[in-house]
Image (tube, rainbow, N blue to C red; front, side):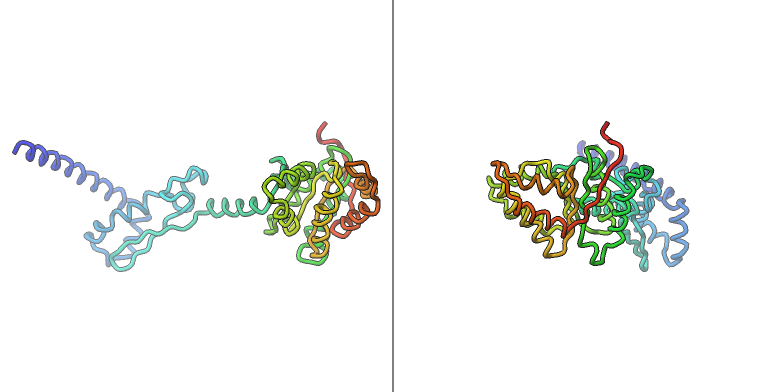
Length: 310
């Protein structure tokens, strides 16, 4: 009998503690102005109904509504992070459901935009570039900025089939311009892919090991907007120039898909660079074909100004 009596006394102590906690919770819930207002709007609910639904009322009352008590999404205090409760009463039953809060909606929208910008070996600051950070005071950059604005305004028209070929000296911000354009495109739910050309060449060469060359080339062909950064900085084999770069540009030209470029060379200088292959051969005709395709998918625009790297 001794163990049973001890267990009974323990249960009674715990039961009293539970009753005390229940009464405290009930008082806190019913004293909440929002809960009191909800109950007043449903006079059909008896005190017994309120007691039966107290846990649901507490679930609603104890959480933040639409970020009111959350400094950020990461600091969300609710049961479901990023979701705000709302209450529904039907007859004598209380139901609590959840909807995405303001900060979760904003976060998801930003993630969607971020996911629209794909990159291959591009630094983080370029992926976070913005038009608002461009130097509008430097007159040598005005033409390039006007061309960006023209392009953004032309989206959804035939003019948007041509990107921009930015050329100029080292450090003037050509790559940053690509990042700013990619951000503007993402705001319009248009995907883009930025590729650093020297790494792109190495990536394609490495793809022979897992037989993924064709898969990657198809991806670069068909992305909404392709951005080739620092073309001319690499030494190209005749195969890469004609079968990879030429194939990508030919497809995009035929499908009216834009390409953006940056280079230290203007198009005439780039043609000379592309004409000389890694084995020392000079192939002006084939280089000229690449330049012709570049002209079909982009507009040549010089970009000068102060060296941002010094």
